[in-house]
Length: 169
Image (cartoon, rainbow, N blue to C red; front, side):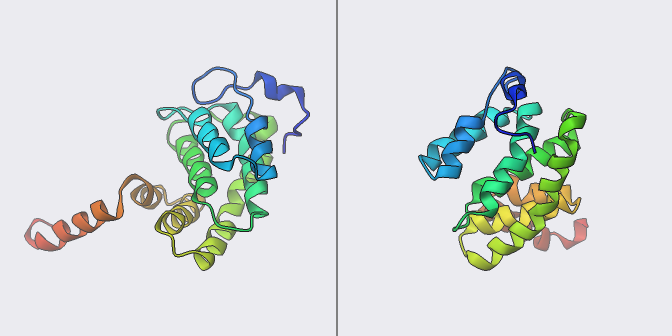
């Protein structure tokens, strides 16, 4: 994991393809200060219209580390990390070689943290994010995308339409 005092942070690009240093937002999460503001910033800066960058990859191990210690489920961590991994698998740039090992170690923790949160929460966003995180970590991109790209109502409608049209299958 890239140390928070490593000078490379100030050179890494985020989702906008401009330098973004996520350390202040990560520190707010770690301290439990202004968490909504920190999550909003990380969502906005680490991913933008299907783009991610080295800052996104460098932040993932820290997000997972912070989240693993959290007392309560929060859909943001699993959903944002899952989205970054989905973009990487689909079209994103490869993580720099010096980030690869810590990034993949964090991705391999998604099923454990997702399963933990499935047991701790009945909140729809938490459950869907946990299931999607498990799916993406296990290589089930389409399943993860169904859970994250569509609302419960949209999925219910898809199921209804599928069941109504057996002749078209």
